[in-house]
Image (cartoon, rainbow, N blue to C red; front, side):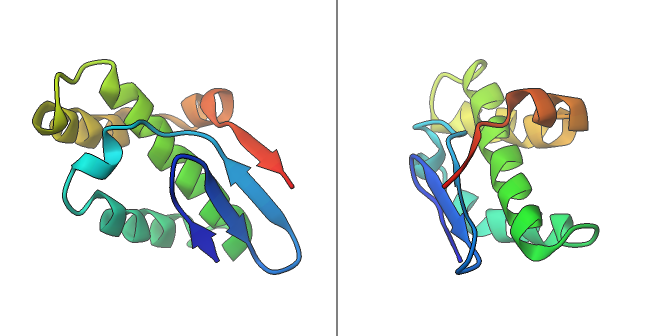
Length: 102
């Protein structure tokens, strides 16, 4: 189960994680939440479900943080967010992910 918000919560019923990446403009862009499911699906290709979901949500939130540095509002945020999804590297994720084990 994954619940997104200012702080994301992810659990498989046994282990639980908190992801603190993201930006306040994210909920103001239509379909951004729905698109997260596609990102999670892409991460599921090479990882177990719990780890994939945690990594995908950190990646998505980190993209939001990078996008916000360039955005002036929801419209420019949306474009910058797509660019951030494209340009974030595994190293960016390793250094920028704010994941806590609960």
